[in-house]
Image (cartoon, rainbow, N blue to C red; front, side, top):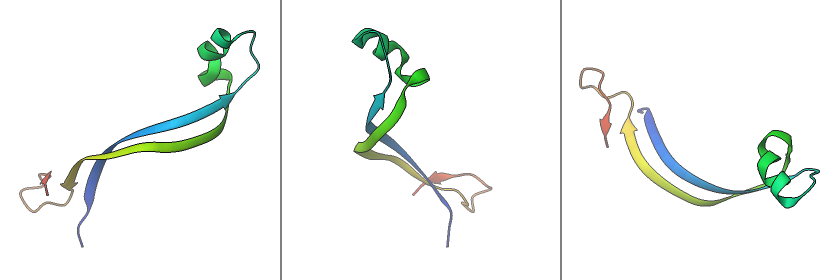
Length: 63
């Protein structure tokens, strides 16, 4: 068995809840003050797959 490194691009839809003075205030502070209440992966794309234990002098290469 071999080791592989798989690099992906993942797009998520995340919902936060926080007390705020306005919608703009909430948009500016959701990461620091918000509570994540829901998340869903909406997109996933494999960018590359590399064999991590390649026998070519320790170099990784595309598979």
